[in-house]
Length: 208
Image (tube, rainbow, N blue to C red; front, side, top):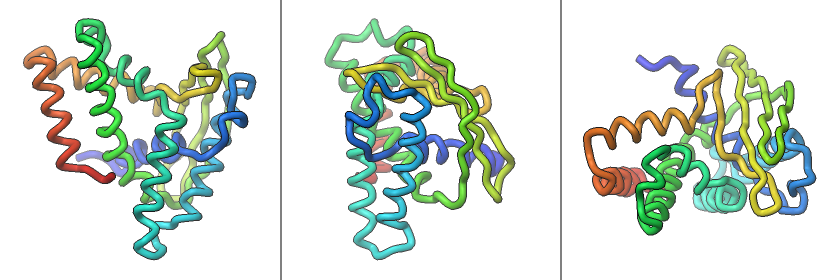
């Protein structure tokens, strides 16, 4: 059975990746740690503005804002490319685009439910590793409900601003985890079958 901690980790990933902030505030000249701090501060603001425990009309407003946040600040194509691994280049552009769209919605539909369970988590910023256009921001997450654990946010410069393209939770890469799942699927089935599977799952769990 999956432990409460394991179930909790993906929620923190989404919680810390979604935010509202102007492009100038997190441009390429902004230190990556400041970028991630803005991520965390602004998601708290969004959840406080449209609390889960508030009136029912908060729900569509909150989810629309989260969708807007992801669109602006999440490097969906880079994440999809890395998650697909060696199978990416083997696909024509139109199928790459379709996979990116479906993968994006898979993430959104899954994590929106987790971010809405936010409670009392605290974030400590430990260190930043910067190498050219790539950086890793290491944080420590604490909560009254769970033991402390580490999250590394991997970001890259894209379109003159920082974008999150992976999150490593206690040494486990989110992108690598999906790459393993997709690789296992594609070792037995076709890419078109993978697209159909993603499409069906998204329709089943559509939270737009």
